[in-house]
Image (cartoon, rainbow over all chains, first blue to last red; front, side, top):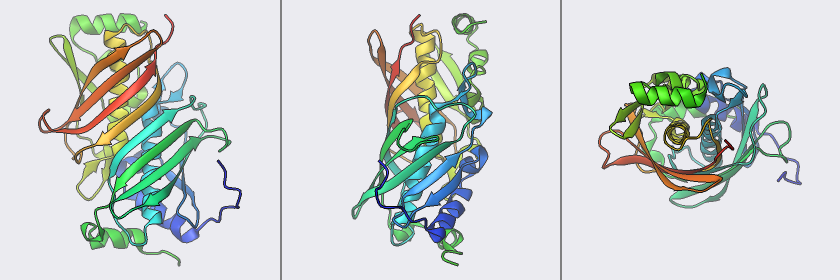
Length: 166
Length: 145
């Protein structure tokens, strides 16, 4: 699952991704942040362990819904970081396989990348993991609809892009 | 009180808040549940903290997914005598329309219950049930009794 070629962290894309996520109230609310974005737009987010996101109070395991939010956001952010021009792309569909429960008290990382960008649709894939990316807790594939750059208001584009590659 | 007792109490009184309060994530996003005859409809009241698209504004797609997933698990506990929150195996969601910053409703349907696995279809809408904003399906592992 790990690329054999050492991935290169792109500081510009990483801070762009963080600015994008900071615009999303729910992501701020649950403490989602960007771990890194590589030069191909592959995006890793981190969801800190959060009692408020627990599904089963007896086990302390975070609910699958929180993992869905992590993976939807990681995939959507990978789309933003992979397109040549900034474009809002809503999720068309998302499928998540839950391989095993996340360990309580530990953060969950979500990695996503775009494996095909067509004129209308962007295809993403990714996985969620804790300490070892080769031992994922969930797999995810998604598709995102391209709306075209004209659907993204200038002020929003500016807020997300400003500061790129400074 | 265990989950079975909570479910029995909730069915009797029609008030599901004690059952839902057992699940911290449900409280965080604000899930509610109301009974209509033999059916239940789950409700996610509009909440600024659930916004994921500031432009429309619209609810975060992940929150809608989480709400649907949670509704399906609650549904199994309420109607299939599942004694605790069942483990989810997989979840697939289609986004059909924007989920605006409004109240959202969910209804579940048991597609198939086997000995170990249940398949649940889930529908979410805002304005009218005839115009779903998302449809989803999920598989759950049924815990041993």
